Length: 119
Image (cartoon, rainbow, N blue to C red; front, side, top):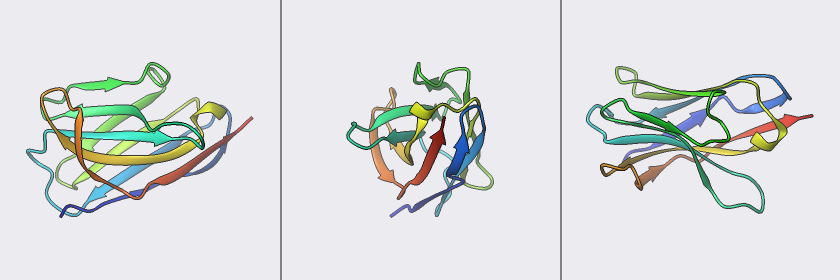
């Protein structure tokens, strides 16, 4: 059972930056998909940024150009650099491991880290 632990969340003013990290308990080399998701109160969980084993990435339209996903295989770490943060980015952020050529199936989830952006 892979365990994922997120860190780096916090409170920041609009326009600020945060960097999230997700450390996996097992070696992630060969994992097909790794990604970041978020869920705001009263809203459904949404995909934020995905990186697959071919190093292809995709971003939600709402964060493209502001967020950057990266992976350090040697450190079993997935990161999310978030710049130009907006109040609407406020949510609980989760990392996940998954599989499938389109990265639509997710098997392992972290407990989440809270991001709060004030205006």
